[in-house]
Length: 298
Image (cartoon, rainbow, N blue to C red; front, top):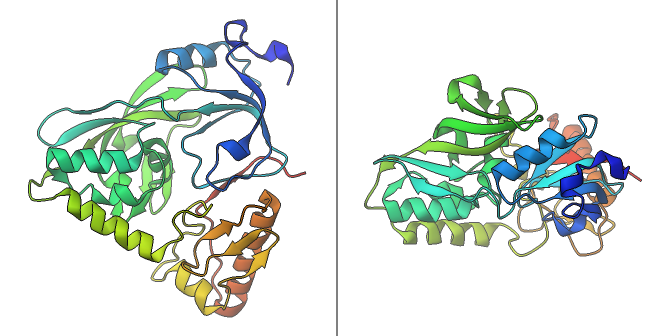
């Protein structure tokens, strides 16, 4: 990437050729041309306003639900981890949560405030920004069921306040104004003073008992087809333990692909395609990926 593509004020703050292995839960991925962690929304707005419009931009949070190919990412990656971390109660039932807040933290704070149902957020391995982008869910709950309004930033660095009605949402799907990214959202819950931290601990214990927590994965790889579960179909196809290179289908939960420490992004992507092919052959169902696959191959 030509140095002239960078705003002069940010030259010293932007990392070049930053390995995405450091920033994804699968620990794979080639380098990003530019990698920028803003201090706050104002600085990010200034950065985007000055950045050459020809430079593509991608935002990431905790790097879960993301597969970056081995050739890396052309353009600029905006790192929101540790940024946009405001979390405050607006009134009896509404909260404002920044896009950089971990979903588990949101769940725990809502419990303290006596608000719910918010426990399901503890099962989402990412930040609110990612949950908003894909309508993430867990334990029967979905993010956009609680959204009232959102704040976004566009490619020119201009902030927008948008109502929920400006978006079309469904199962793991969100469509709205193009080339805008979420800064945060107003979320509405109900008063639930009887809910305790023990409820979250019970949910997390259930998750730990059924999912390969602690291994390198992205969470669920495939969305559930209507009326069925991807994990059931994959298991029924005899694919648990199937391996390509350092990537394998988890023996604990068939909708997880884990990196044993030596996998490349290509290994993981090939295994994803293998699972899709076998499940379609055996069950007549084409599994759709929940994980976002980005970047260039080698």
